[in-house]
Length: 141
Image (cartoon, rainbow, N blue to C red; front, side):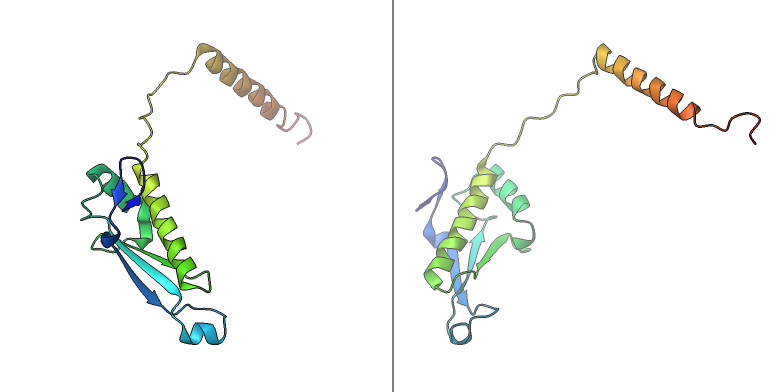
């Protein structure tokens, strides 16, 4: 079990790993060793996640989410398979932790204070005077 928070943990069997060849420079290592990791996690059908967390996770995943509700995370920054695997898993855990945070409270509409209204109107009046002085002077047309 992979612990996400004190109340959420996911089973390792829910995560599907596949290894592919990394792109970019690296010489012989890139051409013959499959070091890049693709992690797949089905956020829509996971029994470990509460529904509200699952919905927020799917929104947070963005372009990493497939049409089937599977999150695909790729890691290929390191030369070793093990380090890439750890990085991909850390990305997934962090994404789920972010989704597990409670949503911020709804904003309540408030009225502007009397002082803020007066300051706004004073600023507008000053600006009006400044702009009024920019006009052409009579007799110089």
